[in-house]
Length: 168
Image 1 (cartoon, helix red, strand yellow):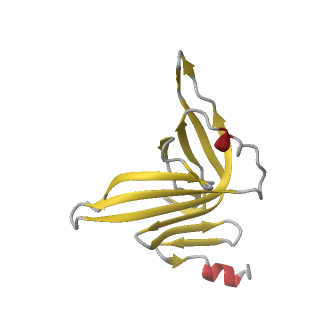
Image 2 (image 1 turned 90 degrees about the vertical axis):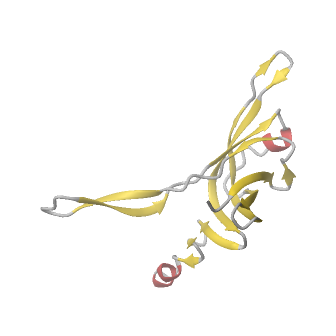
């Protein structure tokens, strides 16, 4: 066992959501798979292509106009989202930090249900994500940047040769 999540926090730009946060989920990572079938072949192969568009859902207790008002922005008027996580390495007995930085737009808001005096959670979706960076204990695990055409995996810049060849 490497580590257990012992807590997390979520910032929407400069707005600390610690006291409001119900749930947050970092983007699922997947790649487009292009099926290649060779002539006369008995077998097909799925060649990994580009990374699928990223999205990250989160929900807050109650209704907060400072976050809700971010919905409706257009591309170029990006919001930066910060996720902080405390991991506990149970074997080594030490704390490890994880930070995920997303740049995108609030692409959906689902208003809370109200029953009597009780309001539910407001659900949000972060979409149109153009930058994603995942850092664990100071090590860059992933970095994707739409505009600079960068992809870093486990500290290795996989896009360096590609960008040099196509003069990106």
